Length: 581
Image (cartoon, rainbow, N blue to C red; front, side, top):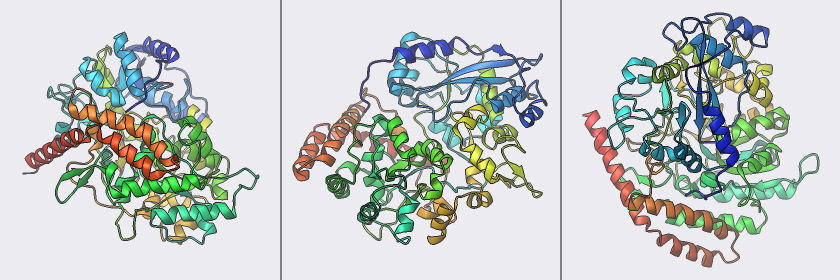
C-alpha cells in the first residue's frame, strides 16, 4: 500500500547512532530535575522499585527504542519526568521515531543491518521483523511480569500468537482497566470547527450532504478569519498509510464500525468490500462535486502530514475526516496555545452517515486489540529481563500516573476526596509543545491503561476525567456541547457496544504480506486507490473516472483479499467459541 521512497541516509545514521547506547548501560542518576517540585518528587526512591530494573548501587540502565511512526512530541534528553521515573524504576529509554521513510522501509533498513534497538514497534513492518528472527518470543517470560500479564485475558494473549505459536509483541493501547471512562473520542470522525456550528445556530447535522452544505454556507458568508487569511473549507490527508482520511469513510457512512479494511455484516458474519458499495460511489461523487466548487482543498492530494498539521494549526480549516489521535496532540494543542480555540477554531465530531435514520458507529465502547503489531523486545537486547521489568514497572499505578498525569502539585491537584484535576494554567501548560518536550514523559508507545485507576476514583488519563473534562473546556466548546446536550466528545456521537469477537479486522489486514494471494491483492488494491481516488475526486467527468477506477480495481482480484479476510473472520469466531464455552 505504501509508496516506495529512497531510503533516507539520515534516518539510517540516526538509527545506528541510537543503537550504540544499547541496554545495560548506565546513566548519571544524580542529575536533579530542573524545577523545585520535580526535584522534590525525584529525591525519593532513587534506587529503583523493589523489584525494578535498577542495579543495587542505584545506577540507571539505559535502553533504546525505535517506533515506526512519526513522533507527535519528542522528549528532551533532560526531560524532568523521565528522570523521576528513571530514579524510581532504575531505567530509562532513549526513543527514536520514524522520519522520512515508510515504516516498512525503516524496518527493512534495520533488518539489512542486523542490528536493532532494545525495543521496537514495527508497524506494518512487524511481520518482516518476525520473519527475520529479530524479535524475542515472550511466552516464557510473561508469568514473571504480572502487570504485563494482566493487560490481556488468556483468550486475548492467544490471539497474539503467530503461525509458529509464539507471542512476539505487546499491544500498547488495547486495555481498559476498571470502569471505562471515555470523554475524548480518540477515533475517526467528520470533524468541524465550533465557529461553523455557532454561526448556523447549532443545527442538527446528520448526513454527508448536510455536513458539506453547512461548510459551504458558512464559508460563503465568512470566507476569511479575523486577520483576513482565507479559510480552507475542507482538506484531506492522503499521505502514505494515513490516506484512511480519504478512503475508508464509506464503512462509517453506512453505519458500520472501524473494521478498517472490510465491512463485517454482524448478522451473516460475512465480509463486504466497502470500496464498491453504492455508498462509496455517492461519497466520492460528493467529494468530486465539492472539489469542483472549491470546497475541497486543492493541495489535499500532494500535502505531507507535516504540511497538513501545519495547515490545521493555523485554524483556517473548517472541517476534515481524521482520527483524533492523528491531529489532536499536535494541531489541536497548537490551536489551544494560540488562543484560536476561544475564537471557535477547535474541532468537534458530528454523527455523519450517508442518509438519515442510520445509527452511526463512529464510537464503540471497549478496548480494541491490535493483533498485527505492538511493542517488542529485539534479539539485540542484552538484558531481556531488565527490559520487560521496565515495561512492567511503567504499568505500576504510581508510574502510570507520572506518565499521564504528571507531578502532583505541578501538573495536577488532588481534592480531599482523592479526585485528580487540572486547573486552567495546568491544562494550558500540558498543551504547550515546549513544556511537553521538557517536562512530560508519557512513554506514549509503551503499554498503558485506559479506564479507571486502582483507586477506583480517577481516570487513568486526564482527557478522560469526567468531572475535570467539561470544566477545563473553553467557552466555545462548552457552548457547542450545551447546545447539543453533550458533556463530552463521545456524547456528540453517541456510543455503541463493542462489536463481536472478530473486531477489528484491520488488525489482520495490517499484517498481510505478498506471500499469499490475498495479501498480494491487498497491496495492489491499496496502490490503485492511492493512484485513482485523487483522480476520481478531481475528475471533470466523474462517471467516466469512477468507471475506469472500478475496472482497474477489479484487476487487483479483490476477491482473493476478501476470501482471506473471510477465513480470518471465521477463525476468530471459532477461537472465541473455544474460550467462551
